[in-house]
Image 1 (cartoon, one colour):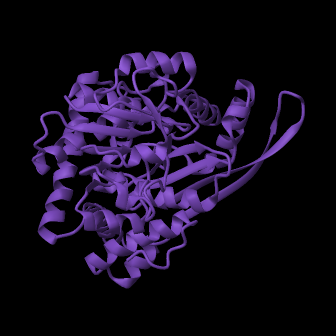
Image 2 (cartoon, rainbow, N blue to C red):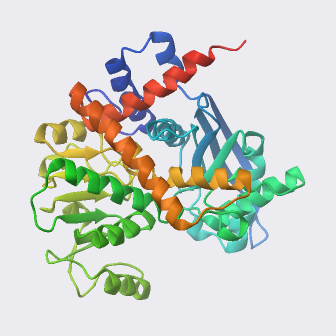
Length: 419
């Protein structure tokens, strides 16, 4: 299935996942051709005044894959080496992510080729406002609504919202999501991705009839998603035995003391050297004998080289595209149950949708109501995907894509071609 793919092209991989679903659906060729490509791609090159009075040129992107089901929705990433190919892949992924959980959005993504850690706060603000100005022709509450992603923060979203508001002459809080609470952000947005990972993991464990008295979990990536997932899974009675950051991991088969680990990380800047466990590599973490594996860091960590060494019974994909198509084939043959990324990490965009709705009506909900709504939407989507997987004898990823692609295809066909 995965033979002949370019390993270095995220967009080719994204198209491959779409093609598999399109084949299952027997999608008409004309609809397939429309959905296989992005709608628009904007590349901008813009100058920024640096603190030393020099002027540096940066390259940024904003891509919209499909808007048949509603305005485009997708994060903005600040990452060194970011390419148009990667942004196109992530925009397509967002279309399917929004569709599989039933949100009235299309998919988009954006970003700047920059390492934000090398910028001062002032330089970061200048870059953000200039980038927002360059892509502003695409943005707006009814057109395209950005959110935070790798390398960006609620503060970055506030700057983007303010820039758009200055252009419009009035405040437009619904123009971005993932903002601070003070300017129209939503309670629960920060931990939403990890909460969504937790909800679907618990449902998958029920379905699998896991017999262990205390299931165990290893989490690769102890950032925003991994940290909240670790805490919430532990509260649900699952033993967190390993976590990792970008440099190294920590493992204790008896379970990690997460409060002590957080304090260690705050003081030391990472998990390495924590006395409550032994240091391991990120690669070793993926191969631990655990009930659940949560890759919540970067893409392509499970490949054909290490997939056969995975011992987890369940993989919940907290990161985008952590599993290559070749690894997918191996894991499916091994009987590993996978909750795919477009479902597993959709908690962030679900609560972003709530934030957008709250901003549009200027009426805000309590945290308990937001968590209840999130649980309802993502759990319903999980069982829709599971039902399709079981009835059609498809891997969970293919089932999720098939459901999502069918929804977008239906909207595309009903709307027709203009003019």
